[in-house]
Length: 360
Image (cartoon, rainbow, N blue to C red; front, side, top):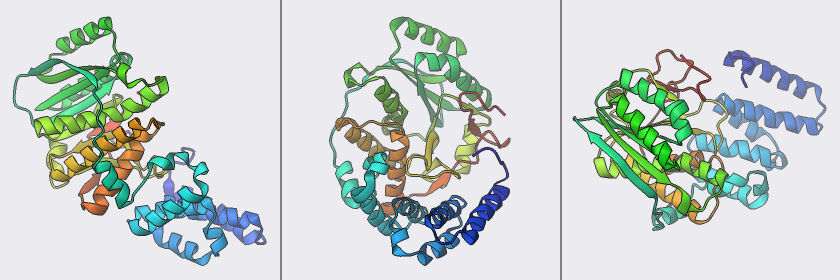
């Protein structure tokens, strides 16, 4: 993945190796493997015309190989041929779903969308608004969440970068499963920072009856549920960031540059699959009807999954992608990609540090 930084060079090298193999192999099973890798390569580099030409040229037996079908599914999703993608997805689930267990959560059909939207299952979170400190007008809300340990190691740095670069915001901080002593320390630190506007929430996961892994998984998605609730209460645009993010420029400016969109999501350029195509680390939602539909659908889908005791890693990003397709397919939402805001770009408004590994 990171051995060769130049993507054009990377493509040429891999493509040359595959072509060499195809030229010298005498139509053995290796040829089928190489054709699959060729399709994978072309989709990775968004060479959709070439992908289609090769896919159409291969025999039906190879087309029906599960790994080829999987690449074809994602090709159809990326060019927004959702009707055909729905057919391929159903075939994969029916025939070979053991290869991709998390596909159980990935549905793009109208029946599932309607079922989720009409799902009335709710969760009573043990959440307490510990401090509400609003001293002046604000234009948007910034949401970040974590544990006490994450607060110490990452959230403090995030808050400092936000305070240094931006203005006219309301910070909403959610800390889960802190003991009383940890809560006192967090309250004390927040007061010392002297933020103009902030909401400090403490929450216990005890009533959810989840194990350690499930709790960690749930709270990657829980913050998006908080975004939904805050938008319903405050009617403001809302940013959401991973705790190990850094703000580089005034978020007011980013908001004003993107006012014509419903939302800004981190849509990956590389390694795009149903569980990774949209990364959950940085999102921005304008206060529009379509953003509200997106967030409410996301909330109901997470509740549905939690009700059925099916929490698995990446569930936050899978549901983000399902909601993305739902809004694109049926509501024609205007969604902009914010992936250019990363540690490689010195002009980023914000970026994800991968636990402080990459710093501009």
